[in-house]
Length: 442
Image 1 (cartoon, rainbow, N blue to C red):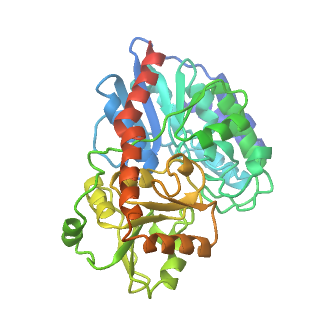
Image 2: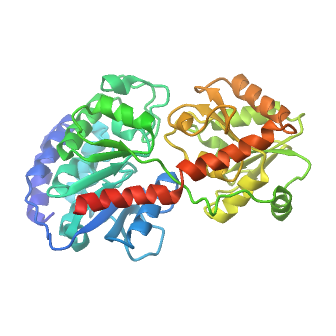
Image 3: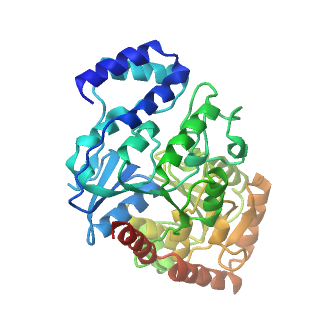
């Protein structure tokens, strides 16, 4: 944005009430856009390029697609060194940005002031793109207000990894149903991305307004989330399902005794694994339930292994591992354990469940979101109804423990592996995205 527009916007925004910020930002839609259409190419966007399930999926799609298309990846936080990955520019510290940030904080408008993305309009790689593929846009690096102007003249694909498109501020609805009526009177403003005062009704109103202008192709990894999007955005013409997939050549069964010995894990214990970023401090994945189950079951022949934190163990029967980004190392840990315990409270189509099952590791998980589209209870895993009490999860885990020397416990890992191989392979997912891109570019 040149100096003239910065000065003009600064003067306008300084005088408006914080509640009027989205209306002023919506004027950006009127700014002229000039795009070079000579080259057919794709650019994708995500908060990170290396952290979390959404980043893994976004990177895998991008890396695969580069063999078939001209493809570039834009991210809010760049950690990888690949030259085809670009960090989205930040707005300079100017009078305009200071005024915007002030209005945003006072009006609780989340990251609407992240106007650095507007610089993409002068980026050659972005100008040449015919297809924009959005993943997670929350994370304090992108302004929803810029969606209409940046997407003008381009086709838009949006892969959903959580519920943020449905809500006024939070990335997961969990047990809250207020998104169905447009939010407002939010029961928990502290849920990421947090706001101080309840502005959720207005936030969702403007989010829907700008997204409806795009009329994007919405891709959901689960039927569950796709149906919720159709309810929330009845005007969107194309909402489809492409399931997440994982690399079944990496995530595969291995000799349990050998990998336990290699990882120096107990060979005489029933190993219960929990995997989540921030480990048992993760409120979305049921961390508090895991802590309580560990505390209650110190007498049983169980050893709990949690991954995702640098903290020390909470009890003698608990081993804590830091976050593991290497898939081969993670696959060994899956293969070494006896069951994955996943009492999640907020999810879509979790990779951790697919990865564990591909390694022949039975999963005990909450019967929520897209998980029942993966797990059939007592066939290829075990489900606990909804997001239940600690007692319900403990009861199910003990029931699985009692099956450890039975034929059932031999059959379920095989069924789990076969389910992923047949339905949720990485190759299948990538081919679906390739077909989608080809249809748009042609």
